[in-house]
Image (cartoon, rainbow, N blue to C red; front, side, top):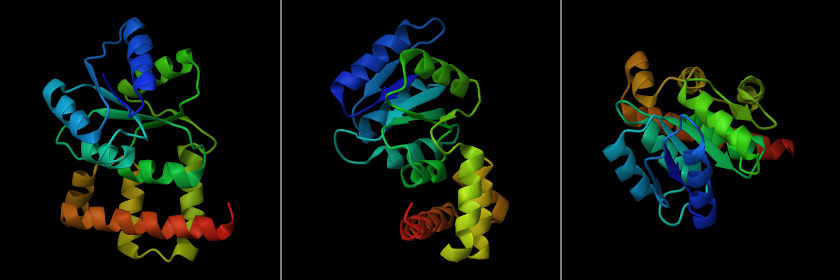
Length: 196
């Protein structure tokens, strides 16, 4: 397991109590995207525990996207403060496996880490994956997503990687990323206009 967080106290605390939990090995930590990707490449962890705020460079969403674009990506558990759909949507589209509020207690975080590493999806926030899917479905008409954007979004919801989406739809990886960026922008604007 790798811990990535821009806040030294949070990062060190996570490393300490996760590493002390039976059956969990923390192989390293990083405070920015460059360090995170280097560490993931060197240690090939089964799980990355990722915060939103990093010390410099890319944010947590960009790191999540880069991690999930690897040929054999680890699972990603995001720990962040915001607990509303606009904050979750970019991580959802970037391919995160689990999403948990950073103020969750230690037992909850340890349990989420274990379950995520084992292939489960843990969504300890107001809107779970099913609710998120419903919200996205309800927003698509007013967002005016294209047929291709809807196809990409549907595959992403079913946990396909960007590479798998590209292969399934016979389009380039760059095109997949473009569609996801467009979906994120359109749905983000739609949610803000709705006043939620």
